[in-house]
Image (cartoon, rainbow, N blue to C red):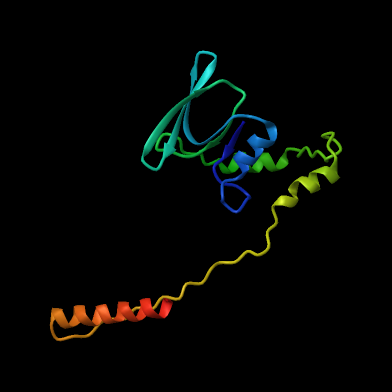
Length: 151
């Protein structure tokens, strides 16, 4: 199962891991290359310091990310227009053989209380002084004031 690295969970990247846990599947995030390796898969995963290589046997759930050789294609206008003409198949919870009440209970661990864009107040002050030593001393006094005010 392939899912994006970010999704409708407000970009926190939990969808892949939560889905894998729910389905009982192994999970690897930020995969940018998938190659066949015998009866399994050879995967390359982005990390903060480079790449990790992993091998696994399907079924597996992967979150996919872009790399220089893995860029999503932009659909042509004609293809987008044709897609609007195709019927959309919808399934209800009952069609899937699931209990709506149980699903509601399962989602209760995650509640969005508030969404907002934090405001940052930025204040910039320039220290005054005739010489470099005066400016350094003024800066040190300012830092001491802030440290003492914070406690």
